[in-house]
Image (tube, rainbow, N blue to C red; front, top):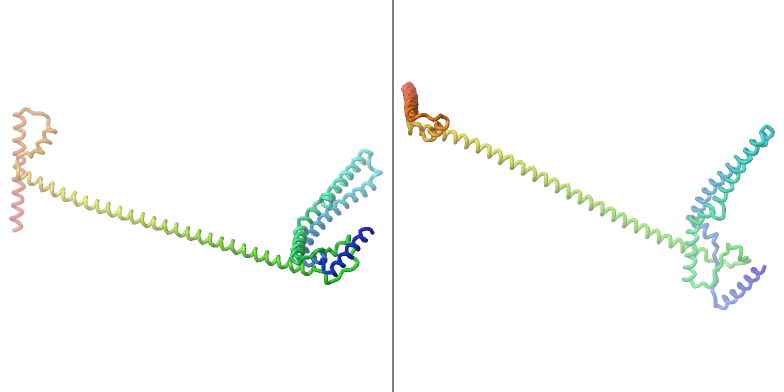
Length: 311
């Protein structure tokens, strides 16, 4: 009653000053504002789903304990004192566990309160920030919450209600946040696309570089093979010419020295032949010269006969 009278005095003083243009008063209906916010309703729905799940677990555990008590009551006369005590202890243990579970979920510091703070408090903070911003910009001196029953408001003038303004302001802030978020997402997407394009260009450049290297390596291998082939061909030609040259040189040497040994032949002969006395060596050389002369004469005779036949 004392609080109510104090509030009446404050309101009377405020309205008097308001009429004289000294002070600006307004009120908001927080329940009305929160009902108009989809994220608040979604938070309440999610919280209610969690609460119903926990309530279902509690009901299930409670029914299990009740069934155990009923079964114990029916079997009581058949059980020994020790077994009866054991059953009662089991029921007491389950009741204690159930109480602990209830406190964990719905106690003053339970999961329900924590989840409510996590889901609902951010929305309430958003509303409070919007109210604070509107109060500062519109220069209100006093703003009441109509949904607060502790105030005990008897009458409120609809003209002083700024709840819809708060909702519009929240919607405006949400749209701005949405645009900012979308802009950020577009920038990140563009950055990602640019990074992917750069990566693709890099991979393409590396692929082309690798292809050029392989092509160059292949060309060098082909040139090397061509040079080796040409060198082999030239070597064969040179060997062939050398063979012809040696044959010609041998013929020339034969014609030049006749039945005598050339210096090279003489040198090789000396290497292969064991040392002879001067007389034996002279006789051997004479014999070889005679045989060579006869062979040459025989070859010349055959060539002459072939030549005569061809005529």
